[in-house]
Structures are given as structure tokens and as C-alpha cells.
Length: 273
Ligand code: FPP
Image 1: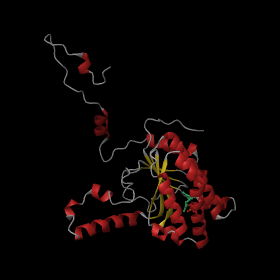
Image 2: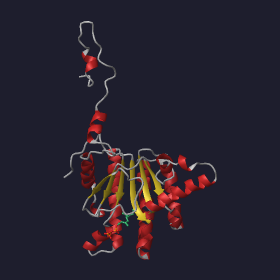
Image 3: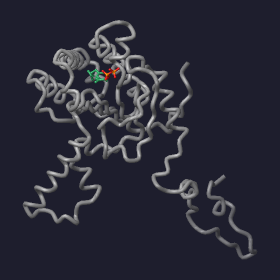
Image 4: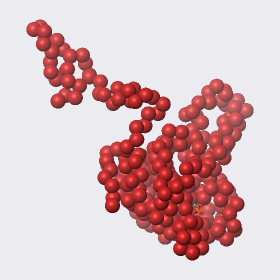
């Protein structure tokens, strides 16, 4: 059953670690690729749901740097699925306001996959409703190291002083720039790890872990994740009292005192009610 969510307080950026394809397949005595193929169906459904909800940013972990260590057959299968996904979904994606972005060390991808990705990037470049970032050959540590190297190069070239490096400048070097950091991270299959995903970007992200295996992650699961997110208090290092005080609207002006000593009710009530 679909749980109730507040459509006015949706996470603006959802990141997903799509885990459990292999286990989904093993449970059915199927090959691992069959699990990944079913996983692609779950990706399609998730993209549709995010579109419906008007969530502007979705970032998915499709292939990690560590995944290059998997058997060749599985890597080829995953690359094939990626090709197939772009080929079969591009029209729907393009016609529905979705822009595709890829994040990661793309130099390791096969040339034909790269070509297709480039085509998809161009075809969707002007779409503005949902940015779908596919992390491919991605590692959070590598993302941070790459940013560090870029800044070190600029410092060596005399363009930058080390003390000018702050969180904003650092974030600007990451693959995910200029997107806001994720509000909600969903991880499937019950594992409670970040697994080298967006290490810097997840600093204040709410983490939601579900036991569901990725191919079983459907719209109801997404709504449960969003409902859990909405039940959390995001304090960002502040106290609960500070947050409550921030949520109180400030009265525009101090209540105006009349000559008879009474105050104007419209000014003294910050809610204006
Ligand atoms: C983890 O499951 C999943 C992956 C390594 C790949 C995720 C990829 C997809 C869902 C399909 C490709 C995506 C697109 C956008 C086309 P696992 O294999 O580690 O599962 P296990 O832990 O049960 O073995």
C-alpha cells in the first residue's frame, strides 16, 4: 500500500545505492545479469516517480570503480544493459524533461558506450525538470582526490592561495557540481554502508536503508523512503530549539503602540491571523 507523503516537503535531491541485484537473481536461480536487467526496470520506475513528484535531482550509483574487479562477463553484461537502457529510454527521457549527466572516470568505459552517453547528453542537454546523474566508474574517494589535485594544480600555478580553499571552492571541483548535496540517500538490500559513494556530498544527508532488494524497489518503496525522510528532524549541527526558533517567522516591525496604550493587532500577531 502506498503511504501518505507531504508533497510540499519532498527531498529535492535523492541519491540511491542500488544493491541486491545478484541476490534477487540467486533467489530465483537465475544468472546475475538477469538481476541487473530487472534492476534496470526499477531504475525506469524510479525515474518516472521522481518526474511525477517533480523532484529535481536524482543520482544513482550504477557502476563503482571497484565494480571493474567483477568477472568480465558481468562487466560486459552491465555495459550492455547501459547501452540498451540509453537506446530504449532516450526518447521517453528526452520527451519528459529529464537531463542526463554522468559522473565518474569515463576514460575506462568502452568507446561505443561513451559514444552513446555523449549522444544522450546532447539530446537531453536543454531539459530542466529532472537531472538524472548516473554515477559510472565512480568512487567517492577518487572524486575527492581529483578535486584536491585540481586545486593543488591551481595553487602550484599561483592562481590560488591554500587559505582560499574552503568548502564552497572544494565542492565546485566535484563531479556533482553545481547540484545541491543529496537530502536523502536510499540504500537497498539492508546493507548499512556508504560504499565509497558520494563521500563529501553526503555529509548531512538523511540515510534510509530498506531490506528490499533493488529489483523489488517500486513506487511504494520510494514513498516509504520519503515518508521516513519527512519524519526526521534535520538539525545540520544545530540544536532542536535553534531549529524551532528559525522556523518562527519574525514579526516585520515591533507592535505599534497607540496613544491609549493598546497595540495594533495586525502588527502584534506574527502569523497575521
Ligand atoms: C549492485 O547489486 C548493483 C550493481 C553493481 C549495478 C547496478 C546497476 C543497475 C541497476 C543496472 C544499470 C543501471 C542503469 C542506469 C542502466 P549487486 O550485484 O552487488 O547485488 P548483490 O549484492 O546481491 O550481489
